[in-house]
Length: 269
Length: 218
Image (cartoon, rainbow over all chains, first blue to last red; front, side, top):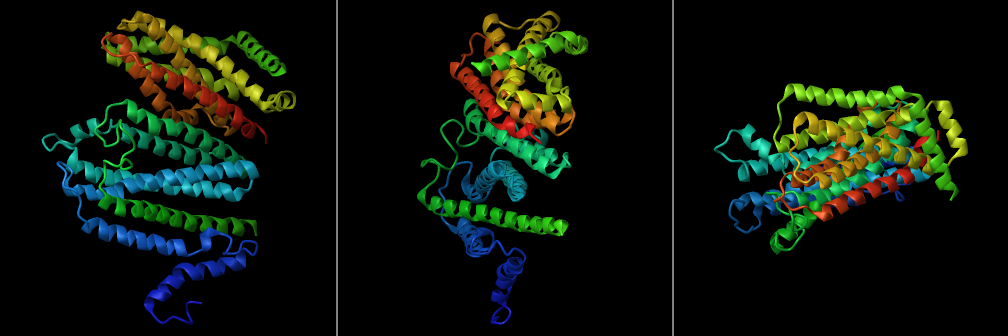
C-alpha cells in the first residue's frame, strides 16, 4: 500500500488516486481482477496526465507558423480539435458497448454505453466552448453586434454536424430516462444508439462537404488531418494531445462507471 | 418467396385497417389541409426560398402525424400474435412499405395544396415532384423506425420528434438544397446528392431489418 511506503507527498496522492480505489474494488468484485480489466490499471492514467502536461507546456511554447488571421490563435488547435476527436471516439466506444449489450444482454455494457455517451456530450460542449473563443478572434466581425455574427456563424456545416451529434445523444439520454424497466431501457436505448450513430456519420462526414463553409477542412478533407494544414512541429504536439485528452475522457468515464457499478451492487444487496 | 408473400399479406392487412378505420386517414388529410390553410392565412405568397423551407417543415410534421400511429395502434396482444406468426424482418418491412405508400400520397397532396394556396415558384415541375416523392419516402422510413422505438417506450409522438429531428436534419438539408435548384434553372442539379439520399434510405431499411428484432421481443 502507498501508505506504508509513503516517502513523498506525490506518491501519497498517486496512491490515493489509483491504488486505494482499485484494492478496495478488488475485494468487492472477486471475479474481476484488476489485471484483467483496463479500468483498474494506472499506467494509462499517468500517461494521460503526462501527455496533457506536455500538451499545455509545448502547445503554448513551440514555434507555430505565422498565418494571416490565425496568428497565435492556432494554438487553440491543441485544445479545440482534440475535444471533437475525443467526443467522436467516446461516442464510438458508446456504440460499441451498445452492440456488445445486444449480443450478450449483460447490463454492465449498458452502463458503459450510457456513461461514454454522457462524457462524450461533455467533451462536445467543451469543443463548442473552445470553438467560441477561437471564432470570436477569427471569424466574428467586430463591426457587427454579436447577435448578427451568430446567425451567420451558426450555419457553419461543421457546427451543424456537431449540433446533430449532441442533439442525438441528448435525445438518447431523454429516451433512457423515459423508460422504467431496466432491461427494456437498456435494449431500446441500445437500438436507438446504434441507429442514430449510423445516421450521424453521413451528417458529420458528408453534409459539410456539400454546403459552403468557412471552417478549415470544408470540401478538401478532414480538418487537421491532411498534411498541408499543419506543419511538422504542430503535429508533434497535436497527436499526443488527441491521445491525452481522449484518455482523460476515458478516465472520467471509468470513474463514473465504477460509481454506478457500486450503486447497482448496493441495490442488489 | 414466402417472405414476400408474408410482407404482402401484412401490407394488405394494414390497408384493410386503414379502409375500415377511415378516421385516421381523414385525420391526416384534414391535418394537411388545415396546416396549409393556416399558412395561407398568415402570409401572402412567400418567396421561393421561404416557400421551400415551409414546404419541407410541413412535410416533416405531416410525416410525424401520419406515421406515429403505425406502431402505437398495435395492442400488446396483437403484437404477441404477430410475433408468433411472422418474422420481425417481414413485419417491419411491411410497415415500412405501407408507411412509404401513405407518405407518398400525402406528399403529393400537400404539394398540390401548396401550389394552390401559396403560389408556384417551381420552374422545373417534374424534377421537383420526383424530389417530393423521394423526400416523403426518406421521411417515412426514418420515422417508421422511430415510431417503433417510441411505441416500445410507451411514449407519445413528442418523443418521436425529439429522437427524429436531429436524424432528419442532413436529409432535409440535402432535399431543400436540391429543391432550390428546381426553382432557379441557373443552379446545377447534382445527381450525386440524389444518389446519396437513396443510399441513406437503403441504409435505413437495412438498419431497421437488423435492429427491429431486438425491439419487439420482451
